[in-house]
Image (cartoon, rainbow, N blue to C red; front, side, top):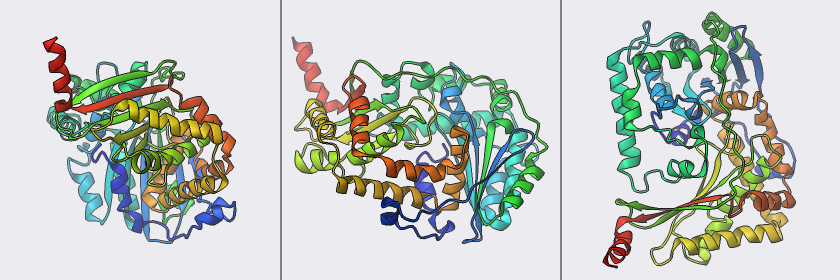
Length: 467
């Protein structure tokens, strides 16, 4: 991940998107909705192209999503999908190292990439006049890369430094999204560290890299999303011009990484030498993608941990005054873009004067209140309004929209899900939220990590030793 917090980067492109106004209150009342324009075509080589025409700004957003992520990387090569993402910026025989970035930024654009469990995405935003050069660059690196020892060693070192900066030398070290998955999931595909171990990264060979590109970076394993100042006819023609000649390549069959809900709570205590206050991460396995409970679980997550008005913030931070903050995660994506087992995780820093038991008891009380009483109409409407506003606002920026459409086409096989999500949110009832809380937010389905400052654990360890 060239910048791990990709959402921060994407937020900077809001001015490059649509100026379509969205009335969230009207949508919550099932009034007028903004329908995202979606046109889809599959080329003969298997590349699926999605175009969203919008002439409100003379700019375009581009996303190329490959259906490969951390779940599909080779065993004993943890972090390989992430390493390969970095290598995609190291040049080709036709465009050497640095050309990709210089062409895009020199024309007023920006670009990035990220690796997730189910996909790797490469995104750009630029003036509409730069669309053809960007598509040429993306097609060029889909064909092949400049595989050589120097670039491989360079990016191995870059990824290791990223791990040092983002994990090893940071308080809490990403335990709420790295460590929690290692504890909550049973299958290797789901529970290994997608950042990768230093040993596995160093063991990656040029042959490994070339094979990974051959197996997973063919056009038949990719979706191209284009949003902005372009018509579908133009987008499809340009896709054919630059990508149409790339032959399809066999893609390995995906392993069976399905898992059921957990049946016994798991609790872990970790020491943190850099943390100043303790923290807790509580994670529950989510409904499968496409399940009738997916939208209710998304609404439940927003109800419980979506900002300062949420039940957990009001209950744990403001009410009981146990926690310093409350945040939540849906794996490394969001409630709509995953294709295998994922987690809903609540993360909070808590006061040293309390403990994990008190935090979990307070969380359980809030969940129990939802199970028993449901959600009143006004609260449910507020939560839905916020979710709808976030969904529409995120898809106004062309780079976000192109990326969303490409990811939905990749994972759901249907980019038009972008226009179905609002209806799914609106249709959620109090009974649906109750069912989701009762089914998924159970103690048996929960994994907990209590991350304590090393200084807090030292006295306990000393007392145990003295006995």
